Amino acid sequence: MKLHEYQSKRIFAKYGVPIPKGEVAVSPTQAREIAQLLGGPVVVKSQVLVGGRGKAGGIKLAKSPEEAENYAEQILGMDIKGLTVETVLIDQAADIRKEIYLGIVIDRAVGKPVFIASSEGGVEIEEVAKTNPEAIIRQAVDPLLGLVDYQARNLAFELGLRGKAIVAFVRIAQGLYKAFINSDASLAEINPLVVQGDGSLLAVDGKMVLDDNALFRHPDLAEMRDLQEEDESERIARLADLSFVKLDGEIGCMVNGAGLAMATMDIVKHYGSEPANFLDIGGGAKAEKVATALRIILADPKVKAILFNIFGGITRCDEVAKGILEALNEVPTDIPMVARLVGTNYEEGRAILDAANFPSAQSLGEAAQKAVALAKGETI
Ligand code: GDP
Ligand code: MN
Image (cartoon, rainbow, N blue to C red; front, side, top):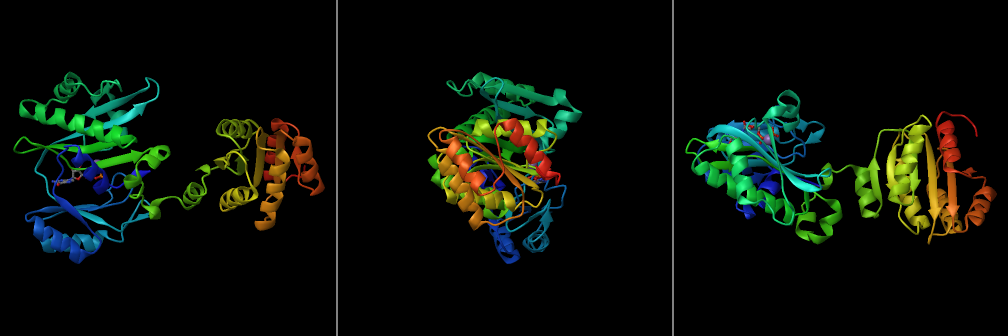
């Protein structure tokens, strides 16, 4: 789950990271009032869950409350990379002398959180990685020790900071690290972290991505979800407790178990097609859940065939077969389908499908080939 800039910065501030004074507005009038209260120049910043808002015209520097109102008028309702701006953040303008990038991600290869920093901040870090990879500094953190003082100081030195900026940077890096760990984030990023004219540091932009699987521990953070900007099918799947990731292919995959879902996607590719989704319907797979999953898959106009791949362990294949047929009653469709059931009661399961003229297959290879053929409009 992605957080908006203003939400991320508020979390950072709780951990001692200095952020500009500011408030969000949903109307131009409100934007003017906030600018008035803040006094002096402000920045009007679109709150949408994509990067590069600056380049897209979604960030404007306003010298007066009237100017802030005008910019808010322009920016609210604006389309930025397919997202409509509903909210703007009005922040006191910073006196920017230098822009630094500072972020934390999990590095799966080393199994640790890793700080990524660059003195080439402001622009997207992927861009720096491409054009100027030497400008990127990394520092892995031992999760048991946290970010140790000397590691934070090393980062500050390598970024070219000197004097009291080093002390300020150490506090910010450690605060960002705590925000990252305590929120179960997969990304926490300040871009840019700016050095101001008076030598102080300020987090001007913020971004956090939270681990959906840990959100149950953070009801306060879960509430921050912006429903409008979440993919419709992924939202329905989340509410139905299905693990679903939309992809670009044409074979809809309905599978019980994450590993099996991965294997199913691999074999679909192996036989020359592309999966339309990753979907783990979990154990049990009652008709209602299968029906919801079916609706989600069918909502994707690219889907040309659906492959059911079910392994019956505790789940019984005859129950699943009944679930599939019941779901089809609820969600009628012309999209061709094939099922491969294996495990507990699979013979009974196949008999149920056969009786209903529902195509099935013995092996996963056979099922995948049939699904690929069906997607091409061939008969099986
Ligand atoms: P992004 O484009 O979505 O990453 O949005 P940012 O919040 O990072 O803003 C983009 C750029 O706008 C920054 O890198 C700064 O150069 C500039 N900017 C943002 N806030 C201020 C500010 O308070 N004062 C000034 N002068 N520039 C700002
Ligand atoms: Mn930025």
